[in-house]
Amino acid sequence: MLDGKFCSEAWDAISRYVYAALQGGSIMKGWTNDEKMMIACCNDGTRPVIFKIERIDVEDGESGNCEV
Image 1 (cartoon, rainbow, N blue to C red):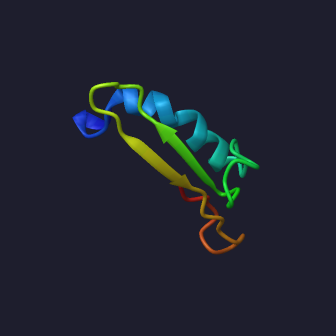
Image 2: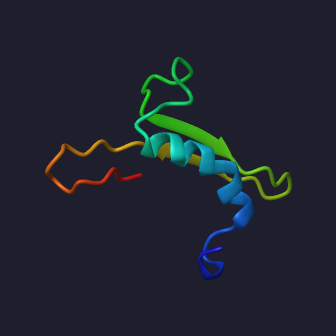
């Protein structure tokens, strides 16, 4: 994935969180102090990686896109 720059298994672990963030949602509401923050973990048991995903809301007219 991404020409070998990002592990496809890692993307599989975080993609639902990224898509939720792009839609302005929060999967972990009530689990974290900030509903814009999500925590995901790659399922590789020998080389675990923890991802902190934060939604950055951009005001309309600034860039027109939501950044993750």
